[in-house]
Length: 474
Ligand SMILES: [Zn+2]
Image 1 (cartoon, rainbow, N blue to C red):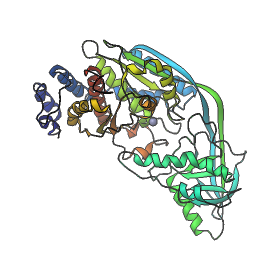
Image 2: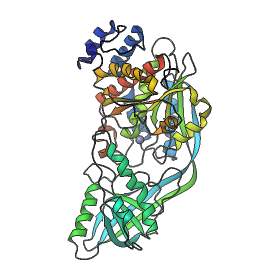
Image 3: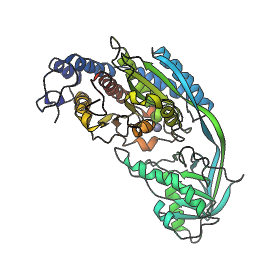
């Protein structure tokens, strides 16, 4: 248990005000003090404001409508960067600029699959990112199904001239842990298919929905160039259908796969950056990624993360006086096709990484936050309790010290920058993400406000708290 006085329940706004005057007392369970009573009061006021603030929703609506899908390296992503600059300037951020970088660009042109025999019918597929094209008109071959990636990997079968189908299903979990496993299938299949001589590869979508919405996603690691085999994802019902066709057919099932894609080894993307200058040049870095896959409008992945962190940082910027540390908002570019923006940011800011006190990205949808996680130095771990206690009235529970911080801060985390994670409920995230269904209507305005409230308090506390999060001696 943390502070019993506050942790008791969800009687939100009234409870927050009542609790404010007693903040400086040592809590009964021995939580150390890292903030003053006044700072505690401000954090609580930020939570109240966040719960009423509609800035994030307005930004999300604007980004997903006035820009729409924002494929990495595309003209639309460039328009999104201009939108980002205008937005940050309008909201009063300083030092607003774009840091451009190069990436290899991939785009889908057309995609088609069908069972040719014995049960002719169309299948719903989408090409995976960096899939090469098939020859014009497609390739036709016998389908060989593998229950799992492992089964494909260890198979001794001759697959030359065949179309392989990896049918491994993804598990639905609140924390999204099924994804890491499933992504292996998306990244490894084309490689193994090439080794074994297959002419094309199909995978069951890396996703948990049961609609005819195939999930796209990168088929290679960032920077690896084109995948070795044309590869597409079948929607979950179409993967079921193909599996049934294989079971009911007396002989081979032949499928046509026709994928036409575009690849440019060099294109431009960029990170959009804005700051709320603090009293010191120490940095709190937060943000989301500006690019999205092309099938939906990138509302939950990751327009929401951009909108939430910008709105939260703006609320902190509105607090009277300068924040103790500088708050930097980053709209990372080109996350989806290989963490290009994340790597470019870490490289461009290598010299100042020691001044990065804390980094965090919001990139897990638009649902309510239910858990606060850290990756602090052992000596600074006691500070996590202050965040957790203040976030508890928002329904946010304490997590462990194994936070990833989000994909775009992973290079910072690897360089020793402490990270936190405001973990959103991911129960339905993988029904939507990377599909045509990633649209604004799937986000919930109340949940977005809960996110803004939690982020605003978190950013503020991270900025004001004495010492850093690397270790006690910071
Ligand atoms: Zn994302």
